[in-house]
Length: 93
Image 1: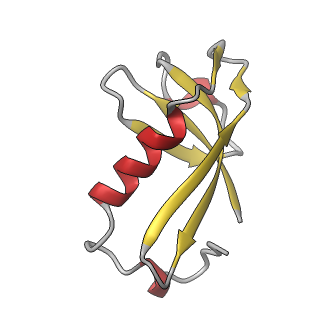
Image 2: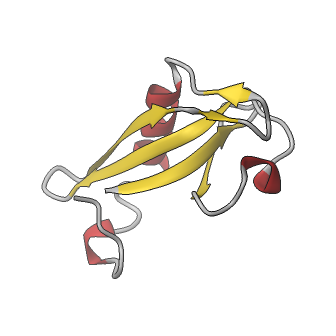
């Protein structure tokens, strides 16, 4: 399980980054922000996420749509382009 931070920008593109950084260090504005748990299912080759929380530095919260936006983005942009099961050092279980 990986806990990360995210911001969804005005174009509905998610920016995902380390929880060690503040939201404001990454982007100054957005429409939603918070934390996410990233899951990757090796057998089905699919990402899923669970979003929660808020960004105090941007004064933005996670929304009900964030999980769908991020999951759709990850699965449409990255699946079949990279074999994530071969990446070292990442634990998606």
